[in-house]
Amino acid sequence: MSIINISDITVLSNQAKFTDPYLFKITFECMAPLQEDLEWKLIYVGSAESESFDQELDTCMVGPVPVGVNSFEFEAAPPLPSRIPSSELLGVTVILLTCSYSDQEFVRIGYYVNTEYGDPILKAQYDESLEEGAAERGVLAPDPSKHIESLVRNVLVEKPRVTRFNIKWDTPAAANSFSNSRDSWDADSTSTLPPAFQPEPKPEPTM
Image 1: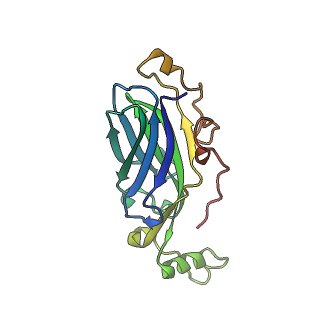
Image 2: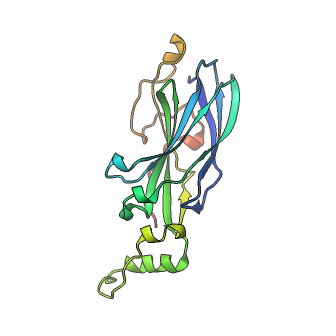
Image 3: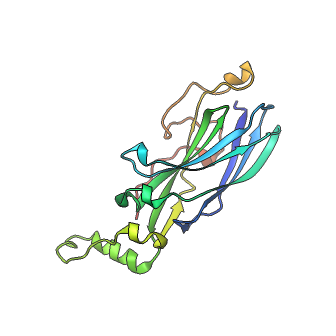
C-alpha cells in the first residue's frame, strides 16, 4: 500500500481558453509521517514526435504533509504557443500531472486534452479545409499560431492514465509499498486507486 494515495483530482478550469491557466483540486491521503515535502508538476506534451517540445508549466511544493486526508489547489500557467509546432496546436495532446518525493517520481497521471477553434467562423473554415477537394477549391485551413486567442481546450477528465513508480520512502517498510512496475502510462498499475483513475482504451482524436 502506498504512503500517498490519491483519492480525487478535479479539473476546475475545464473547457477554457487555450491561454487560461490550468487549475486542479487534488485530494490525497497520507498513510505515514513524511520527512520531506511532496513536489507536484504539470507538463504539457507539445508534440508526440519529440520530448524537446514538452513544457513544464509549473511546480508546487506541498508540505509539511500531516497524516490523514489532505487537499489543495494547484494552478499552472498555460503552455507557450511559440514552443509548440504550429501543426500540433490543434487536436489531441497530453498533459502529465506528476508527484515526487525526495526527487523520486512515484505517480504520473496523464490526461488527453483536445484543442480546437472556439470561433465558429474559424472552426467552419478549418472543418471545410479537411473536406475532399478543398485544396482544389482554394479552401485553406487557418493558421492556428495566428489565432491563439480563438483556441479553446477541453481536458478529457474521464480518461486519466495512471502510472506508479517504485521509490525509496523514509522507512524500509515503505520502500516495498509499490509493485515492481514501471510501465507506460497505459499500464494497468492502478489497482489501489479509485475507479475514476483506472486505465481505459485511448479515445480516437476528435476535432
